[in-house]
Each structure stands twice: as C-alpha cells, then as structure tokens.
Length: 288
Image (cartoon, rainbow, N blue to C red):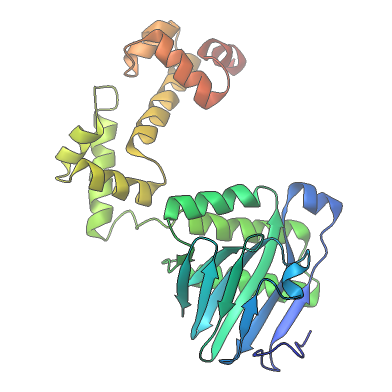
C-alpha cells in the first residue's frame, strides 16, 4: 500500500497493516503495521499525533536503517541510528523520531507473547536501544521477509511470530564470535578453565585471574559473550551434571551435592529446585 500524505515520506514508500487473530494475540508475536519507508529531511514523527494514538501503534517498534540516519528521543534516551543499525522503541511511552537528511528504513510494529519481557531484558542487558550487531544483515533479511509476506498475504502468523522471535533473540544475544577475536579467545579459555574445575571452589576472581583480567572486566565480557554471568554458568552446568548423576547412578542426593561442588545438601536442593522446578528426588523419580 503506497503511503500518501504523510509529511516527509516519499511516494515510493509502502506501509501495511495486519490484524492478528485471537490465537496470535494469546500465543504468538505478531505485527500490527509495518513498512518500507523512503524519507526526506521533513520526516518528523511525534507520539502525540493521531497515528501515535492508534492501538496498532501502541506496542513495540523495530526500525532497520538501510541508508542515512534516524534520530530517536524516548522517555529514557536520545540516540541516532545509522546505516546498518537497528533501533528498538517502546511506543507505549513517550517517543519522537525524525530525519534531517534522506533515509531509507524497514520498520515493524509488533506485540504479543512476552514482548514486554523481551524489550525490558534487551534494554536492561544491552544498556541501549540502538544496535549495530554482526548479525545486522540477518535482521534486515528477517524484517524484509516479514514486510514482503504481509504485502503478499503469504506469511502465516506462526512464521511471522518465528521471525520476530529470531530478531529479538539476535538483539538480546549479540555475542562476540567464540573464536577469531581476542575477546572470544579469552572467554573460550575461561570456559575451558571452568569446565576443568567445575566441582572445585571456583570464584569469579579465580577465573578472571586465570585469563589475566580484572573480575569486573571479565564478568562484563563473559556475560556479553555468552548471555550468562560466570556464576550462573557455573550453577547451571553443575545442575546439568547433577541431573546426569541422578539419572544414571544410585548415589544419594547428599553424595551428588558434594560431588558436583556444593558444600551443603540443603543449598544444593534449594538451587536445584529453583532452577529445575522440582526437587532432586522428584527429578530422579520422573527420570525413570
């Protein structure tokens, strides 16, 4: 659908609307509107305008910048998204975005499933709302395919939801590659050290020392690369080992607790139950 009468939006731009089914609203991620815009320096969107008050706008917004740049002002930040970058905005809160030179963008308004939780986790974890990930080209393709699918009415709600999910996961986990960079090599070395000493008294300080970094720098690097804090990585891998022992041996819960690095059976049971959802004993019963 061609865009007519929107200030700053050039005639070759396209915009599409999508009304989700009741099932999609309950279970999936879904798009309410999307577009491929070519804008000039007159483009200026303020959330107080008539479009900003529509239900189809009051959700979450992703914009990929193909060429040029777009300026964003939200309730918590002001930033500039440039070519190859992706911006993520909560349109339920005050927002304003504008161009001061020609810009080409792909954009989608989406909602559903746990969109709110995803947004909060991405912004909190990444500390920003504008991203220039190594996977930017992948995100551009996903967004282009969503727009194309809605243009031709050939994309199912399930497929659309899956594509939005991939984009959000890519924004949440923008890891350094496991190898090929100094940072990736450091994290790979740290993981090897953790795996070799998983059942010992390993601390963040010990791991950081083993890879010649300060504890604070190491923790930030490890989390940004793996998506886990060092402590969470250790706990989850100890629990995985405990699951294997519960399933394959007749060792008591107390013996398993000490074998996987816990000094207290009570602490082990509490940790296991918190992460797995059932106690070690219940897990053992259900595993056979």
